Length: 493
Image 1 (cartoon, rainbow, N blue to C red):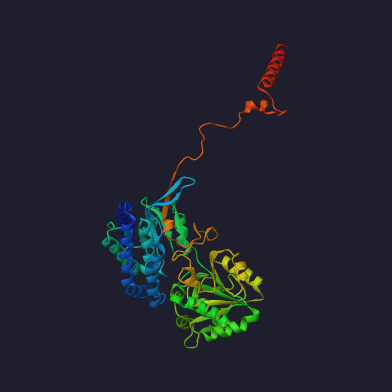
Image 2: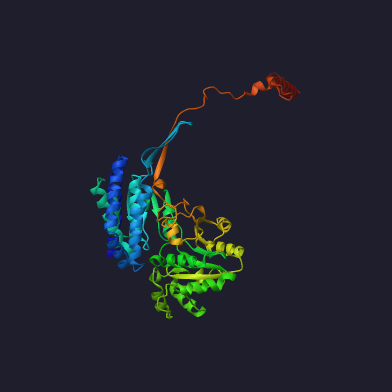
């Protein structure tokens, strides 16, 4: 009975949140650029002021990642994001084509539903709140139950900051009684115009099946290829920095390292020098058993954990100061558990003969749960980067940390915590999602060609066109009259 009451309360809460936020959004839709910018600047300020406390809350509640890295993510989702989106035109006339006489006017989408993952809860909430307001949309969040408190707090802070700077009350909402019923109700309610889903593949699929527009992102199973001309110390440093950043909780983090035979020993030595530990086959098996449940689903207790915590749980001993665990794999699929996505400090390690074999292996790994997302390559040969640009992903990250590169921290990509995987990965976009994905464009188009008179030649003019094979109307009538006469004669007989 208690569960039944809870579910009813959670559904009712969702209905209230959606109605309130939709009402607020209809008012926000009338705001101008200056008003919106003032609101966002205050949201950024409040996000910065609370970056540390929100990071601590997230780690304490979920057990995932590291406080110092979550602080960076909170700042990146506010200050760095603002620098990138501030010049974007999301209100009024955004483009005028004087030649073709077409004017484009931005309109908000309406009320958004934001699905928040447990791996990056506060930073994703801040990021989605800011891009929603930039495009004059309201948003209601559905938090992951294991990150409820910190997501609620982040949403509350963003709403209060927005309202304090002039936004309508309840423009940003968050479910406080999470349940599957509540999430489904929010996905399907009339007030919600679009869903932005960041989370597990099951949740993203549910968002796409809700019967309304959705921007969802798939998992990443990022291969990192160290090509023979790479700067090996730099490549290893980037991979370790990425995989240990928030203990590997970003979906763009490397999952497998691929090296050529000719540099294998050099790369392994460099990993050992920089804090990598190569597990034996028996140790790899023990760790893999701890990492996964129900086949290759990630064990939540191992997500975003340090190498030491994983080693202790698996019952293996590793040197002090170990940063990442590496396990050699001979193939891809069910028999090779480390060939799947591992949102923690564990990497698969592969050796190949040449770049062509690296290509084939990368495609297999991507088809094993990361299609459309990202791929990383370390090389000093530009032509090699172009060869790998042909792979089935939408982010080819060259000579950089994949986590930071994918989200736009170490590259020129748009700062984002929602990384589209395109149609290959079942996503509606292949972009890093920005406010430009959250607006409708209406077009005012002036007539530039005169179509008041039909200038298409009619059928009857064919006879005068000089076509020897054309048949005139008189010829057709003669044939018809002859047929009628014949039929009459037959009838008389």
